[in-house]
Length: 167
Image (cartoon, rainbow, N blue to C red):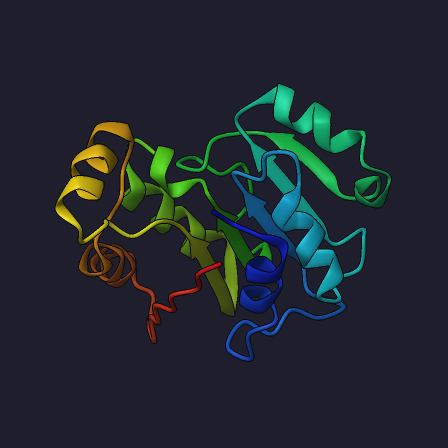
């Protein structure tokens, strides 16, 4: 579950600190739920860019008036279409569990960030209860915290933090 209060808490984090003037990308943006939070956090409407592999999801985003000035691009999280150092902030929520190669996508996240830029990837953690874990493993990728940390470290990210946010 990814609710508006959870999104707003994550994006308002002092560690991430979104603000006017930041160029931000939302990868796996879907219909714009997290992009809406990026705007609420203070990024100007013309500065974010949404990327999703589904044209249908982006068509839904285009119907939202508050996202009218946000650039929307069909693309792949594992092969981002932007030059190195394009963005100050990178967000992705509810997407990593569908990436065939998370390590490749996290490398791409670092590549498109400016020096000092920050990434926030929001995704599920592998359940600890055996029955929940059994069903989760049948559904899609539920990484363990150690996997997230390893992916970020191998990509070259420093000061990696994991924060649990629940409804």
